[in-house]
Image (cartoon, rainbow, N blue to C red):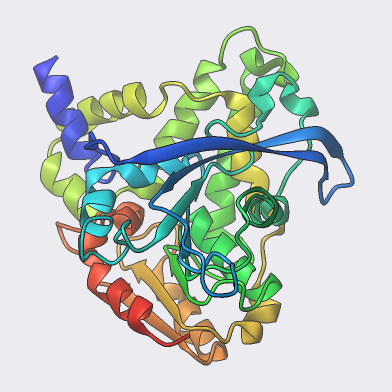
Length: 354
């Protein structure tokens, strides 16, 4: 058991560690008769959320200190309570000091404690995409929490893509954007391929049974977990930590035991495919607020050699792009959740006049 825990600690250095308790509040906002982009509807769409801090109202009576932080594929709002994020950002004098800001952490559609296929509808759940997720976020803010303006949207991975969508679809709603670990273009090339591999693997597992399984399809979920290990890993750290065949294979087995636990196959099918219609590129010129866009050089999902960021950042007049160099200390795609790599730049963004 000790050996297994040690392997997991090394392999998943980019995953959440145990968190100290932060003063949070949780709630559910129910949207009645929510209409999805496909035309499908749900009589009740539940959006779960966690908050830190207290809303402040300005002279006009409106909340003026709200910040929304958006999670990645398969995550939840609570992932932003882990030490490498929360302990760096929420304390006194830190960039997102919760005595100053009202921090909102939603669980997106299909994730966490929000409405999702595993609630009972299975493959009958509406085929949501990122447009639906962003609209549900907007309804939560405006109709649920009374927030019609944000000081910041910070998004990681899928949340990064949502931040670009907010900037193009609702210009100025957020006074600043901090998209971390994504590109503002259609999901294509290798990025779409590894997602499609996961979809195909789950649906090819006989146990999946068209989504009507009585037990989770093990072979499909194993492949999904394996691909997520590769997509999220830092190759330098993996080589250093597991320098032999035996160590690498032992670590992979431990990774599946951890990463595959508690995953529902239908939920995974939906959230890996939700990016299929994503493409904010045509509207990037509409983003005129300050933008801090950060990717990492060891990110398998968003490889810097494509040159996309250097091209697209020029289309946003107040955008700054930073590429974090790869090292044994960075966390691959998961660098986005380790605030020590970018919190100084975030503080600068928040000090910028919107």
